[in-house]
Image 1 (cartoon, rainbow, N blue to C red):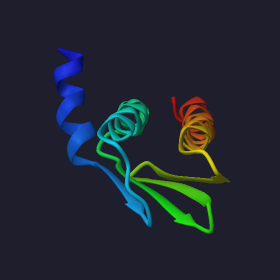
Image 2 (image 1 turned 45 degrees about the vertical axis):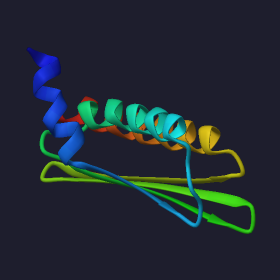
Image 3 (image 1 turned 180 degrees about the vertical axis):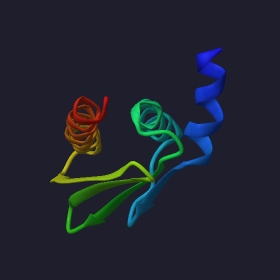
Length: 104
């Protein structure tokens, strides 16, 4: 089934790093599932790196998606992890949709 095909891809090609702060397991799972959705929409065999860095009470979130078909990047700054995650997911999703519109 489609969901089984999506599983290995989203876990093996999705790297999420947290620098300068710790997250609860619940928050970590929420973030993981948010970006797993992006992993499934990304070009086949894309590698996805997400980094959250905390500095002076501000969080910076960055997402890099690398694939043979194209690369996508998005970043945002906020003091709330949920906001920043949703911002970069939204931005990169729009870029992927534009790319798909051009290539399909």
